[in-house]
Image (cartoon, rainbow, N blue to C red; front, side, top):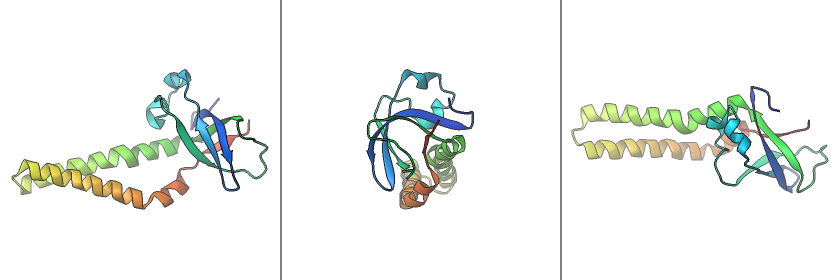
Length: 140
């Protein structure tokens, strides 16, 4: 059972190499009762595959069922980066540009372009963000 400050999901190990263990998240109906379902997006009906740093002292094998966890703060940070900040950028651009530019179509296109630029910057920083958002396999 995950503590209140953790998000946990059951998964199955697909591959183990020296650096990373590939885990497929098993989506179950338990996600509907999870208090963090709105944060992690795991309750959708699709296959999720994540990379977990390999513990050199673990005795896991391909096909083993494991519990994958991350901190709740990582889920909240992901929500801010992917939803809240882009919405703020969009609203700021629409409101500020609409007072300067009279053409609504141009304002809308520039605002969408600003959000696209934000997501492009996030894409450029994906390596740094990947190091911050770390999942781990629970040994209990």
